[in-house]
Image 1 (cartoon, rainbow, N blue to C red):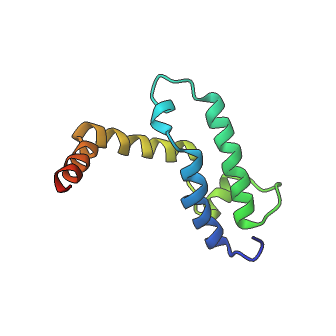
Image 2: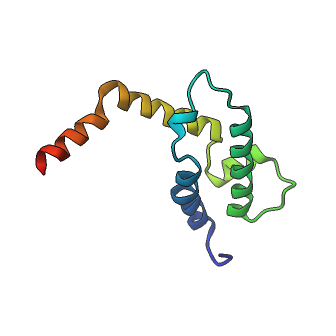
Length: 105
C-alpha cells in the first residue's frame, strides 16, 4: 500500500476504516454513556491513520496533522453522526424507507 497517494489513503480511511470501527455507534454513543475509553481508542486509531495518510513522523502535532490530512477530530465526527441519526429517528426516515420497499414488493 505504499504506492497509494495521500488522497487515496484518506478516501480508504473514510470509506472503509471509519465504517468498520463505527459500526453500531448509536448503541454505545448517547448522552449519558461513559465515552472515555471508546473515545481514547478511537483517537488512537485516527492518529495512526493520520500519520499513515500523510507518511510523516510521530513528532508532529496530532491536531495540526489532522487539519492537513483533511480529517475532523473523531469526537466531532461522532457528534455529527449522532445528530444525523437523531434526526432520522425523530422524523421516522428509516421506517419510511422500509414501508416504501415493502409496498414495492
